[in-house]
Image 1: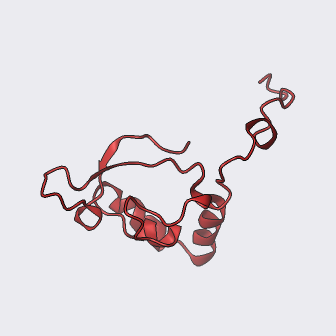
Image 2: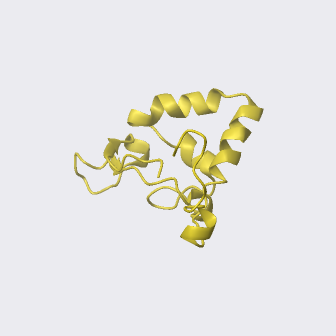
Image 3: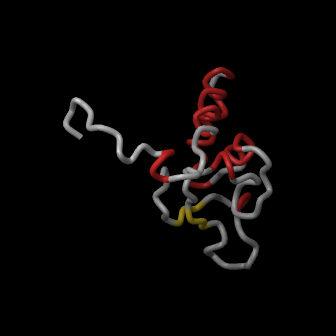
Length: 106
């Protein structure tokens, strides 16, 4: 799922505008299916995952800054990975739930 589903302070740039102290607190969305879910952020203001990432602040500021500082090829590799997180069309077929156990015994 790639989410903790907890509210986090995302900073005033992403805050709701209800006039509450809780305005900057948003619940993390799952990344499973993110490649199929544009536009991004709680209000749809980001058309790409890269822009959505760069708009984060608050508790996510350090992670945002690390993403921004990545060399172009590493940033693209991260975005390419996120583009693989698609919503399965068929749970049994797309997720290989019935795949044979691995050598580790799983």
